Length: 208
Ligand SMILES: [Cu+2]
Image (tube, rainbow, N blue to C red; front, side):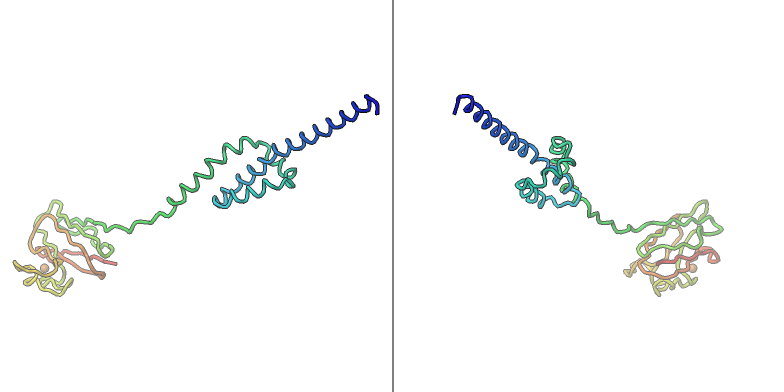
């Protein structure tokens, strides 16, 4: 073979080697596209742990490179954005179960002006407190019906539950006049009350 022939053979070898190198390089460069595309999709399903396993397997197979390369146009941008995105859902998940707080007992005010109680009828929840307040009036003595025994709320009589030294449950009875009186209703029912100092004036507390 002539020297020209050998040169031609060498040129062919160089071209083939160069083509093989280019092909290998292009395959290597495209590989991250598969990884990035798959990883970007994973955070939506919150499968953080399974994502890396899937990505490793996928990168070994270059068969799908051409199909997915179109979608992964901005490969380098995907790598940077993906890392914090995976971390964020993991931190957010524990905060999701927010336990609603139990409704707190409330206090409702009923005013007494010397002519009437207002509102004359109120509806509350068991455990709520009613605060009776005399505004511009004196001689308010809130007490459970019926006058004059005051036995409507807990069956105990005024002479018993208003006696000094009485050790039973706090009665629904102010047991004397005053400008304010609070009582917490610990059971359900409809309880009429009146002003013992003006027994014709009264109202109703409905406890649900
Ligand atoms: Cu009375």
